[in-house]
Structure formats: structure tokens, C-alpha cells
Length: 199
Image 1 (cartoon, rainbow, N blue to C red):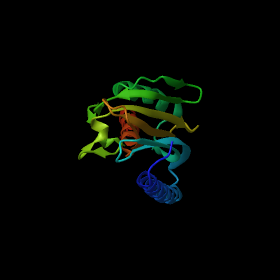
Image 2: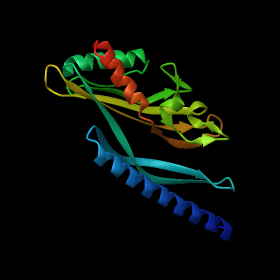
Image 3: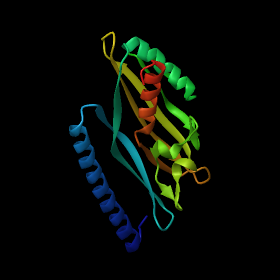
Image 4: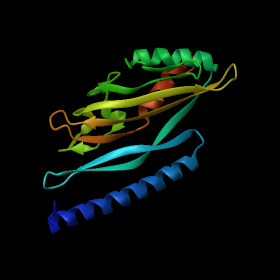
């Protein structure tokens, strides 16, 4: 199937713009990871979809960097893990991923819309904007929220949480990836500290 010169020029422009964006993001992520020791980055496939002016959807399999936000908790790891499970329950996030031996908990397919724990989703994730509104508050979201507790001391441990997801238009089913704002990770850690009586 041949495409028009206009379509080819449009696609080339999109590819150039996408390449520049990914390059800038990679540099920014690299700078952030070297500036602090309290985060951990991992790279995973992240499909990007762009709708052309003609209405054609172009999908790219790129990579994105997901940052795990870590916080020190002033209680032992076992206690922190038990409190973490209570925080997930308070937020009404089912813990479908559970590994008590590794002290890991979370949900990789958490379906949610508009609000999480009484807070609008746009505070926690950025899924782009359409018609001046946040997609995080109008699209159907599937989030990955996973936490792990580390440390072997009796009076200190570390909770690391990673959040990302995909937003799907409720009518047209177009998708876009969501990146974390870091606020949900902070809320989870603060809730654990509060339950430990040492906020």
C-alpha cells in the first residue's frame, strides 16, 4: 500500500519529534538518577501511539524509564511490610502481587478511573491532555503499583514504590502511557510512617 508524499512527510516529522523527546527524557532521567541515591531506575518496553491528522494511528514500541521512589522508614522491615499491606488496603488497591519472603506487594493490573484514595488521579499520574483536560481524569486507567521493603536492621528499613500505567479512551479505545508524578509513592511511604507512629 503506497502512502501520499504528505503522509510520508507527516510521519517523518513525527518520528523526528519523538526521537528528540526520547533523547531529552533519557538525559533528564540520567541526571536525576545521578543526583540522588534514593531512586532506582529500570527500563521497560513502552508502546507510544500517535494519531495522525488523517485519523491513522501510528504505534511505536519505545522504551521509557520508570523510577522507583524510595523512603526510609524508622521501623524494622517486617513491621514496615505489615504496615504496607494495611496502607494498600486503606487505598483500596488489591494486592494481587504478594511475596512475603521478599517483602513485596502490589498490583500490576489495577483498574481505576478518576480518583484513587479520594484524590484525583491527575495528582498521581500524567497521561497527557486532550481538549484542555487531563486524560488521567477522563480515560480508563490500568496502573502498575508495586512496593518492596528492604533492610535488615531492627529499627530502620526502606520502602521503594514504582508506579506507571496505561490510559485508554472510554469510547475510541486509543491508548497513551502514563508517567508518575511521584506523589502516590510519597503518600504510601508517609502512610506507613504514620501507622508506625513516627510521621
